[in-house]
Amino acid sequence: MQRRPIHRGGILSAGYDRDRRILEIEFDTHRVMQYQGVGREIAERFLTSASPLSHFRDEIEGEYTAVEAGSQSAKASAGGKKKKSIDELKRLFGE
Image (cartoon, rainbow, N blue to C red):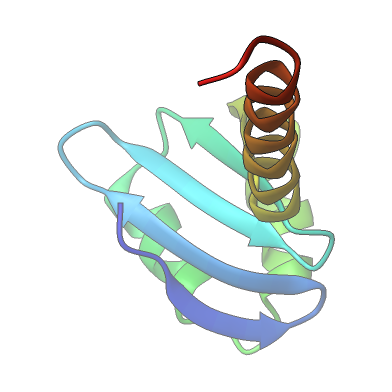
Protein backbone atom coordinates (compact mmCIF):
# COMPACT_ATOMS: atom_id res chain seq x y z
CA MET A 1 0.00 0.00 0.00
CA GLN A 2 1.31 3.43 -0.90
CA ARG A 3 1.41 5.84 2.03
CA ARG A 4 1.76 9.56 1.64
CA PRO A 5 3.76 11.76 4.02
CA ILE A 6 1.81 13.59 6.69
CA HIS A 7 4.43 14.67 9.29
CA ARG A 8 1.91 16.27 11.66
CA GLY A 9 0.68 15.38 15.10
CA GLY A 10 2.90 12.35 15.61
CA ILE A 11 1.92 10.73 12.31
CA LEU A 12 4.60 10.25 9.65
CA SER A 13 2.55 8.79 6.81
CA ALA A 14 -0.75 7.16 5.95
CA GLY A 15 -2.48 5.43 3.07
CA TYR A 16 -5.81 3.86 2.24
CA ASP A 17 -6.73 0.71 0.31
CA ARG A 18 -10.27 1.23 -1.04
CA ASP A 19 -10.76 -2.39 -2.10
CA ARG A 20 -9.84 -3.85 1.28
CA ARG A 21 -11.09 -0.82 3.29
CA ILE A 22 -7.83 -0.62 5.25
CA LEU A 23 -6.33 2.60 6.55
CA GLU A 24 -2.61 2.22 7.25
CA ILE A 25 -0.89 4.72 9.54
CA GLU A 26 2.81 5.07 10.36
CA PHE A 27 3.36 6.89 13.65
CA ASP A 28 6.45 8.88 14.63
CA THR A 29 7.63 5.81 16.58
CA HIS A 30 7.77 4.05 13.16
CA ARG A 31 5.04 1.68 14.31
CA VAL A 32 2.72 0.86 11.42
CA MET A 33 -0.92 0.06 12.19
CA GLN A 34 -3.69 -1.06 9.86
CA TYR A 35 -7.29 -0.17 10.70
CA GLN A 36 -9.80 -2.52 9.09
CA GLY A 37 -13.26 -1.69 7.78
CA VAL A 38 -12.64 2.05 7.44
CA GLY A 39 -14.96 3.71 4.94
CA ARG A 40 -13.66 5.88 2.11
CA GLU A 41 -15.10 9.12 3.52
CA ILE A 42 -13.58 8.60 6.98
CA ALA A 43 -10.20 7.77 5.42
CA GLU A 44 -10.26 10.79 3.10
CA ARG A 45 -11.18 13.16 5.93
CA PHE A 46 -8.30 11.77 7.99
CA LEU A 47 -5.80 11.96 5.11
CA THR A 48 -6.68 15.58 4.34
CA SER A 49 -7.16 16.79 7.92
CA ALA A 50 -5.21 19.80 9.18
CA SER A 51 -5.11 18.00 12.54
CA PRO A 52 -4.70 14.30 11.73
CA LEU A 53 -3.99 13.17 15.30
CA SER A 54 -7.19 14.76 16.61
CA HIS A 55 -9.16 13.25 13.75
CA PHE A 56 -7.54 9.86 14.43
CA ARG A 57 -8.47 10.00 18.12
CA ASP A 58 -12.03 11.19 17.46
CA GLU A 59 -13.00 9.04 14.47
CA ILE A 60 -10.68 6.02 14.16
CA GLU A 61 -8.95 4.98 17.39
CA GLY A 62 -11.12 2.49 19.26
CA GLU A 63 -13.73 2.40 16.48
CA TYR A 64 -11.99 0.00 14.08
CA THR A 65 -10.06 -3.24 14.44
CA ALA A 66 -6.35 -2.42 14.59
CA VAL A 67 -3.60 -4.78 13.46
CA GLU A 68 0.08 -3.99 13.77
CA ALA A 69 1.70 -4.19 10.35
CA GLY A 70 5.19 -3.83 11.80
CA SER A 71 7.69 -1.07 12.14
CA GLN A 72 10.33 0.15 9.77
CA SER A 73 13.07 0.06 12.43
CA ALA A 74 12.08 -3.44 13.61
CA LYS A 75 12.19 -4.75 10.04
CA ALA A 76 15.62 -3.20 9.49
CA SER A 77 17.09 -4.64 12.69
CA ALA A 78 15.59 -8.09 12.01
CA GLY A 79 17.32 -8.16 8.64
CA GLY A 80 20.62 -7.28 10.27
CA LYS A 81 20.27 -10.05 12.86
CA LYS A 82 19.53 -12.63 10.19
CA LYS A 83 22.62 -11.63 8.19
CA LYS A 84 24.76 -11.75 11.33
CA SER A 85 23.49 -15.25 12.22
CA ILE A 86 24.24 -16.58 8.74
CA ASP A 87 27.75 -15.11 8.86
CA GLU A 88 28.35 -16.74 12.26
CA LEU A 89 27.20 -20.14 10.97
CA LYS A 90 29.46 -19.85 7.93
CA ARG A 91 32.38 -18.99 10.20
CA LEU A 92 31.68 -22.03 12.39
CA PHE A 93 30.96 -24.58 9.67
CA GLY A 94 32.56 -23.09 6.57
CA GLU A 95 30.85 -22.15 3.33
